[in-house]
Amino acid sequence: MLTRRQFSKLIFGSGVLVSSNLGRAVASPAQSASPDCDLLIKGGTVVDPSQNLHEPLDVAVKGAKILEVSPNIPAARARSVVSAKGKIVTPGVIDVHVHVFEGMGPIPVNADLYCLNRGVTTALDTGSTGYAGIAGLTKYVIRPSATRIYALLDINGFGIMMGLAGEYANPEWVNSQATAWAAEENRPDVVGIKCRLSRETTGPNDLEVLKRALEAAKISRLPLMVHIGDSYSPLSEILGQMRKGDVLTHCFNGRPNGILDTNGKVRSEVQDARARGVFFDVAHGSNSFDFDVAEKCMQQNFTPDTISSDLAATSVNGPTFDLVTTASKFLLLGLSLDQVIERITVRPTRIFDFAAQLGTLRPGTGADISILEVREGSFLFTDTDGKKRMGRQKLQSAATIRAGRLYVNRSEDLTNA
Ligand SMILES: [Zn+2]
Image (cartoon, rainbow, N blue to C red):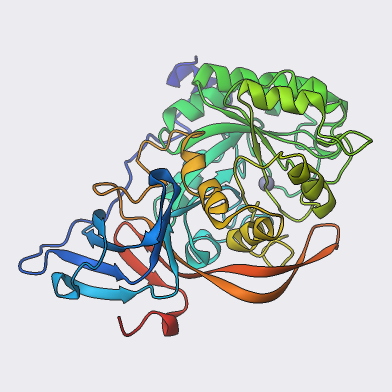
């Protein structure tokens, strides 16, 4: 591990490049007198896989924390009441793959507009930058956003900032020591390392990029997220290097070197990797979700560990739109509502160390809550290859509560408790 001085010398010769962690701002608890809770979410169905809950329950919030989850909490106890009638109330939804370093190149989007406003309270920016830009991401995006944001550092210093392929073309930019140093300096905001292994990003050097990314992940004791899709090397060689706790992202992409063999079977090395503790993440995006691949995997009981959107400027206007739309595709693919909610709430907390208790509505934890509507009807969904499927259910965000504060997304449904 480099010291701060060594790191600075390595990059600029002197000076400090990465600011130290300033601590996460949290809303201060309200002073309550007679009513003992500030916000009461009433009449909804709580779906909280972390506690095996799926039943009609009210949720009381005090300050920035969950006070109580129980049936029929009297409205008189609350300063304000929100009706969740006909809706589901879940732990704050977590999207483990987004790009929200807004302003840094053509790819990232605004976090609050596309995450919080679409039902997501926690989002992981996966490699929009590497060590070079993490101080900027922290200062200008993570701190000011209402969405709770964490980062995975790309193993090249500037991540995907240029929006061009070939970000690993210069080996000087792929520095495991500098990346590990920046990860260490920016905890707990940084929760992992990321690398993108496709022909257009690495050329023939994918295994060298993977080696350096693993090195950084090992030094910083963090999970490595590996992007796949038309990699130069066979998937078996990539998976063979991945460790328990690492994450393969874009798992249902339809490009060469995917997780299915030529007969449409889930490759044995993929099953082996899962048995070893490697996680498989969806990351839909603009180029990485194929209905045929997903269906074949689901038929073989190979379901994703986490469902994520890969939100970016290239996908927010379709075919991804947002996380709840991506999650809805798994309802039509055969997962139950509880299985879908589990993959966007508690499952991510078993992969990443958020230094906070997320993904649960347990009293005493932070009041990050999603109020979702499960709409019934006929909904047409499109994958990244243009293939279409008709679904009978669609998840839609009605409101989000972040650190006890209510953000209403469709206010007409949240009146008359
Ligand atoms: Zn991505």
